[in-house]
Picture 1 (cartoon, rainbow, N blue to C red):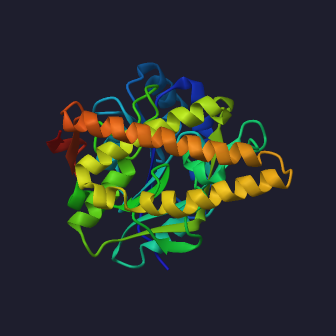
Picture 2 (cartoon, rainbow, N blue to C red):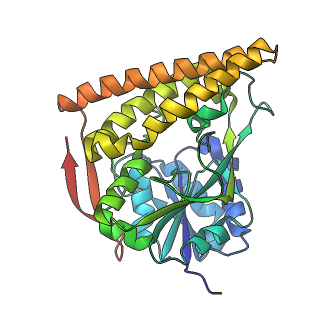
Length: 338
């Protein structure tokens, strides 16, 4: 059975991840379903751009190195990749992750149904210490960019896919525009997120019959450095997620913007706290720490959401939704949201 052509976009920003970047590209080149191209989009780092250009000089037909054509940040980098890509499906991979051999194959199979506009996968943490910290709750694996406990298993319909392991039909961007700039990560600044959630909700608003899936057979392994295994990062990232959710709600409304989060906070997290307390009562290591981390994470995220909402109402938070011209390598008109 023939599959739609897939382009892979990997956004990069620092030479500190040089070996990780090479490993990510190697994992794409080893796919059972070959990509038509891998696009490395460099975020305003001329030295890295030059170095990667030399590294893949002999593989230009397979690996292209591009400069981010928009403002600094992950969203603009992804938009640059979208406008340059030739594939009918665009897959996104984090620069510090490696994909399993059938990653793209499982993505491609999802698009056999013409209603499917996006397919995400399962992201497994690769802890730098060699194992999960015993206090770190699996319900909060999204803190380190991974699939978290509480998501349904198998191949299921979802509100949104997770950006570091996701794919979209090209026509999704024609219908909804690109990733909003002003939401999500910007180099080494506060670890924001939410740009893929905002896009997915905007997409289903534009195409009410669109289907978005997660197929947990499409697996990548995401590197978690030691600094992200620390409680300080956990708390900071949870707070930043609250800030991000406020922007998402500002863009698409609190109804859809917080729909999945309500179930998560009222069902998944209380069950996680109960498990942690039970483990503590049974003398199992880390039980009390996990219960405490969940409570702290919820409080931090709630605080970020409240502050982010106040800032948004006062007009201190702005972002733009670019209309992408997929035939050229430029962004078209933009809608500004305040």
